[in-house]
Length: 219
Image (cartoon, rainbow, N blue to C red; front, side, top):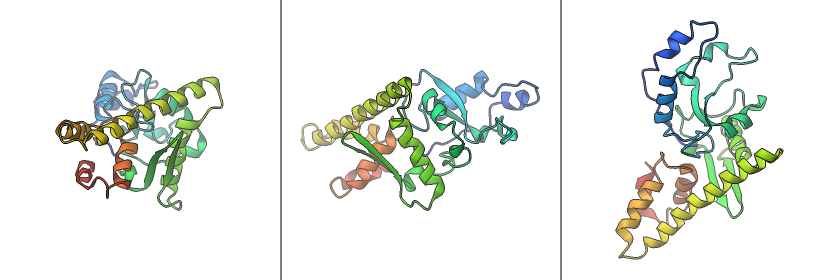
């Protein structure tokens, strides 16, 4: 999860649909603007080019909770179906970070270590960060149904593939003949818009003594 810049004004349909008994918060203009703002990447797991994209509410509007936020542009996020499903637990109803307002990288560590991910709050007393880290861990590890086994494994394998691109590019950078091209690839891989950016950016941050010239790409 990385910081996302939400665009304004809000899609015009939200105000219109909010006046209807059964209005929709996922009209074409909403979908288009969210897809562009979030770079067609799930804000939770950071999988990109989503085939099962959903308009997700940070604060739930069902079960009598926050009904006034149903059409609130600031409460709508671009999510994959897997993450939206996992997040649909009461523990996350009011807890996770709003990545359009706060930078998750400042309060959460994102690591890939061998065959496991290590996502945890910098300070466990920060409830929002701790809950957000728990959610991200679950979307990569939760395997209590057959489909969740498949979807969690798929995300883990895609994360591995993306991290290997970074590792390979870092190795290429050591070769003067490939350095220029490798730097271009690394810069692209470290952009917030790239898939699984939080993990790649955290790797550089934690190895900044080895790669001091790459820190500028994290700003």
